[in-house]
Image: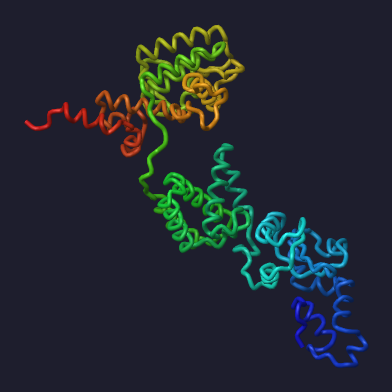
Length: 457
């Protein structure tokens, strides 16, 4: 006799009491109807028997599915002590549990949000009951998944921005692997990664690049973080040495994803640079002369913003070296620097950094503060009538990023006839292909130069 509508483990308990599912009239009269016995079992909670059941086999936090006997609604909750929690709920029946905590609970709430009644209570839809019965495959995670790998790898990143980048890359990987079913990397069992899955990830990232969803650089960076996570898995002995070698060998060439998406940013024209520096000089206090000198160094030396803020007073000479490459300070740059150094001497800062923080001269200028000052000057020069610098502001179409100064340096040297190889040395690139990305000259300019150049004898 099959008891329709009752969980299998409840049927098993009733069958054990009445004998292999055969209910005689004597037993039914002595014990009452099946429904009464079912209610009796629920009220007693069957805690002693249920502890031997798989429902209570999960140590630590567990997500439980409990059904109200009066409303038939299903509660999806989490608790460290499921039996104690059920006793506090009252007239409910435990249907099943699975390993996990608040994040698994949140995913389940999102998964079945269409059946939500209120809070953690849901209608017993066919989809939800099928999931509880195991007819729908659970999240692709094993019972032994370990969050230590994710936490260790993210903690190994030095800066806050690097940590955020690592988390974003791991979320992207989780979303791709699970086909948008899971977005939290801590809910995925990374121990199951193998060579086949690594190849599949490469194919999925290529599809995203071809569709224009992500850039080639983002795809490459995602694979770099995947490789780093696999190394952490190996260090924690969460994967075998043989599997680690296979996956690591597969991820190596995966980084060579190629694409044709143009890089962002643009070089500044001479007029735009003049307007920007004029607006920079109008900033209050010592900020004006300082920002004017910083922009002159960034444009004239092709410096990154991190390299600008790392400069010290002792680094200044006619030919100095920054990040291992030579930086030439010409007469125009020296004149602007001298004006700033005079004001800096009056401030008498205690540090050796060339530039000072905008609010406190006793602290060095940070890369973020430098970019904030550039944005202020750019809004003053190109912002038009906008009172605030929003994403739609006109100034953001002129100065797109701090790297525009480096693009300006490259484009102007190319216009003056510098060879790509020479420019590569001045910019400190290892490959001329990287330098070629900075060539932002218009095609018409190249055609005009070709028309004025004699090629044949």
